[in-house]
Amino acid sequence: ELLSIPRDLLVEIEPGVKDRINAAYAYGGIEQTVITLQSYTEVPIDRYAIVDFEGFEDIINAMGMVEVDVEGKFPQAWHMEDGLQRLNGHRALLYARYRGTPGGDLDRIERQQQLVAALRSKALDWDTITELPRIMRVMNENVETDLGFREALTLGRVFISQGRNAQMTSVQLEGTPTTLPSGAQVLVPNEAANEAILEEFRY
Image (tube, rainbow, N blue to C red):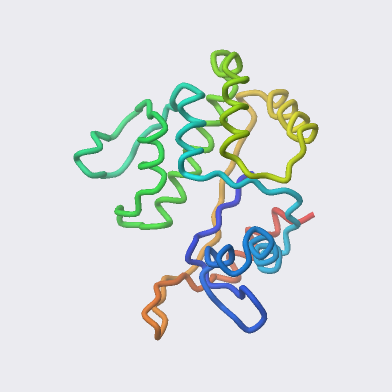
């Protein structure tokens, strides 16, 4: 199961300091991000991976594009119409980052979850497996992680053994759009709904 957290969710970043959750990285890098996430969710985070925009594009291109069922209206210049489309890395990044649909960031999260599911399916294609050495080179150049090689290998074996038909579900934390006195647009967490969602992730 995949859990997505809206970037504008208002949480305690440091004792007595509330801010958007995506600001945690600016406060103290990946360490503060992990602390903030664990503090709010009470879900242990054992490992992390950071992928920059260039890396996102390069990985998809190395995999040979990704097939996505596109929904919504996008800028005309993108030539991205409704229906099944094969996206290269650049177009997939545009699709993943766009906030111009009515749901804004929440719509974007749904598209990102959709892309993750599509990439998972693509990763199990034989053509993709044959490109594994190239994909690994791209990931080595663009992904920052504390996941060791043996751990990654074990995860990969589990991933493949589960197969294409293994169920993958996605959820996202909820909040109410609010404007702070400073003018900042945030999401005030829906604590009851989020507690129910997070219960599924706690062990």
